[in-house]
Length: 404
Ligand SMILES: [Zn+2]
Image (cartoon, rainbow, N blue to C red; front, side):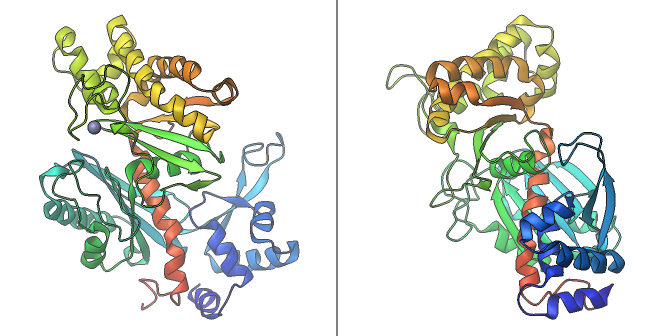
């Protein structure tokens, strides 16, 4: 097995096997036809390299349920994916009050995952120390822990593209200006890919979830804050500086200079009207202090809850309608805890969208709840690690377990 890796990685420039390994990285599975299309290689080159990779144990073949990949019902096809022997990725995703850690193989099969309570705003150093400990602990639970090739990290804050620093300001106090990916890289001795949690949620829903294969997607992460992840023409769009998608602080309606103050210093920010925090506060007079999970349960039975959720959807739609005109997405995905009570939120969103978006843009867009729930961002961090692993291969293929 190791001999094949050594040969693949020591040959300068693209070999057929290397191109195929690169295409399979971060994908659940691909058929031979998809590999031919993606690599531009001939059928015989793909066939030969796949044969070599199958016998090496780096790639495995599965029969894909008929119709799920090639859209031709009744015709089972062979799907190829990387095995654990090809390497592993780890991920850590920070929420405002939790940290999720997961380890997966390069075809995104999760081997172990764990979520723990953590006050992320309470201190960067403590959070990174906890992340290191949790990742090391997770790696004790998987075979070949030294095969980890990259780590993904998600944060509920914009990340500056230039130096991967956390954008300063009140969004994540105590983290502004820091470079947490570099710090975790130093702690673990592994490459770390960092991104904003909404971007990662979008990536996960496109690759594994509610809108697999869609090329233009607006993913809404509605939790204690609100952010959007944009997939444009099949790629995560971060903008010139990495701040694209920060929709939570767009002011919504109302008279200028009035409305609730936001933690960013603005008034009537979308977040003050439609975040889970805002929804739970609106329901407090009727229901007292609620947890988000309880809110989801009550949405099925309580008209007041549905009304508040529909209002939140309307507020979100007033921002998203303008975005739909600008970006013309094919799918809008509702992520975060409210995805489980998506009916009323999406009904409100649809109402505002239809009022604000051009009919051609509004009518064509599908509104769907996220399929991956709260795991979307940590799964996205695993994907981001797998996608970034090419850099590891390109640096002469130094993998953690090559030295064994
Ligand atoms: Zn704000």
